[in-house]
Amino acid sequence: MSFSNAVKERVGVIGLLPCAVGGTAIKEWACGSHLYETMVRRAKTAVAQGGGGGIKAMLWYQGESDAISQQAVDSYKENVETLIQNVRADLDLPSLPVIQVAIASGDERYREKIREIQKEIDLPNVVTVDAKGLELKEDNLHLTTQAQVQLGCMLADARISLIFLADR
Image 1: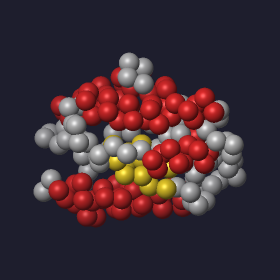
Image 2: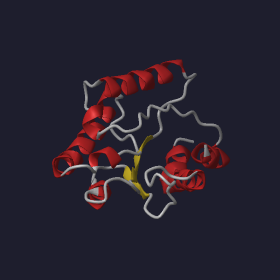
Image 3: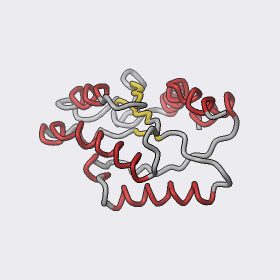
Image 4: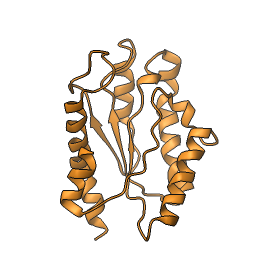
């Protein structure tokens, strides 16, 4: 909610369409998969029923489940870039801004490799917010409530307000 509250303060009320599924690897979001098709269908339905609103950005926070093996790391960048390109094509939004989060947790052996890949995504209108250093819960995987609030504000500050203001 900190994200939506921070954006609301700057540009007014926004809608959010949560499609997150915890513990999923990037390959589970490939075009044609249940998760991908559900996300795209929900987005199209929301726009059709949204009273004139549209999709202004996609927030993407994923990667911990890919920090498990060298094989997952090796295919991660291509899979993320393909996901972004497919979402843009399927929603007919070729310039859709994507704000992704560089992970703060995951298997220590591969976490930094995934983080580096996330920061290297070089597609137009893709911004990366770094969650490293935000406080984790005792499980050393999930962000604390305070860290989630911080991350929400960081996401809002990462050009989100510019994305919404550009349409006004």
